[in-house]
Image 1 (cartoon, rainbow, N blue to C red):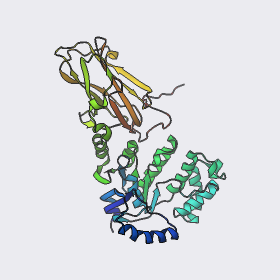
Image 2: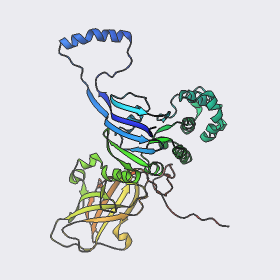
Image 3: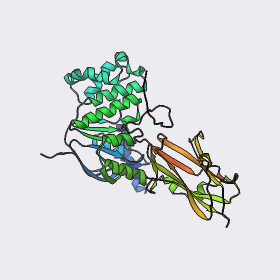
Image 4: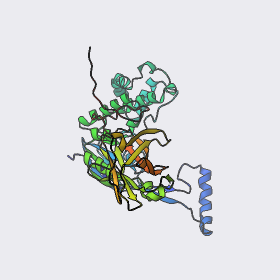
Length: 421
């Protein structure tokens, strides 16, 4: 007997861009269109639309009992792949073979009826997902306990908060006991306690020999749950292998397209200072001096600022600083070399300044980087609009497999807790 759970061969999914989209039409519309089409052809008129391959020539096999992560930037084709595997949408070409009962946690809450109570929706949604009445009865208490909405079980779900709604929906879907569990960004919703429950449930599914296919931008969750990873980019598989290798590869190779398509001088036009030293480039690297485009929270990174001296002089008492702020301009941190009581000596010609950040503490998001150079207290260069951006992805900062607090936070703080009397 084969141990394959999912087999995908030359899978492709094409969409139309522009023109009339395929959809439901009335009989009158279809009849008029059938008469109008030959006339348009005689006139030389053609329907104008472009096509887009969300997936193209995707092939892979997943064995039973494996937990596989699928990662990639927005628009890489991850959600489209899961929808095809879940038979929500048909592929344009290729073949998908699934060996076992499939549960999909893609659009959590689909099928809930706002006018019905939480209790009624458990039975309704469970039936939609393929559970029998007897199976729902047997798991009812467990579903309610997992969701944490027991007090509001007989309240119409239209009065639920978004968090309560999602918790109840996930609780129903997660207790389907499938052979194959397909999950798309479920951990992006809910509070920290609920996210831990979700991750624990998926771990439990994987430990019982079932297959898990998990899409997430949470690299900490991917590392903790998955044994292997598939990287998608522009609808194609660019790499696959062991989780840690693929997560590192993804962080190192994915460079922001907008930034990479423009030169530093094009991005940094407005600046002040006497110009004796000028910044010429900004980049981020790992501790092995490899260029990276995305920082994972909790990892060591190096900020590198390249410079050029616009004279033949050797400059002393050079102070370099950088700042990190939000996209709205809120300053989060500033650090100068002088803060440590030190200054750079004998700076001349061309070179670079590097700052090694240990266990990068910022949470997921995009941050604005500013930089400034002073020579003996006099400003040499200060780009008003900053020197670039950094993209940070959720990482396993605390080494627990959890992203930690998911509320309105910007920075992680590590330390040691103690109790006493």
